[in-house]
Length: 119
Image (tube, rainbow, N blue to C red; front, side, top):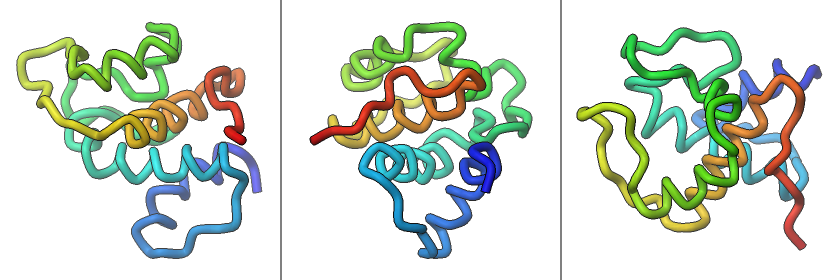
């Protein structure tokens, strides 16, 4: 299965409980895709080709081209991210933030840079 097709299927697989066996790094991205669908999908495009429902919000796949992905970890963890007034504050915890950032990084067309296997 192609990388993009696998990523596009992640939120659906997570919702259906049909998650494939994946490496720890892929597991973080998979958990991040579920977080993205639940917490971000009302405003942001969370997939590989979809459009953002809220026109002023960038697709998650574009965030890696706008910011160093590693900076998103601290910004999300501190709640200091938001380009518009409607951006809600939420606490994902460190693991949730890292999972979401791993998913965002996995959407980068050139391949993930942040996403590294943890021991």
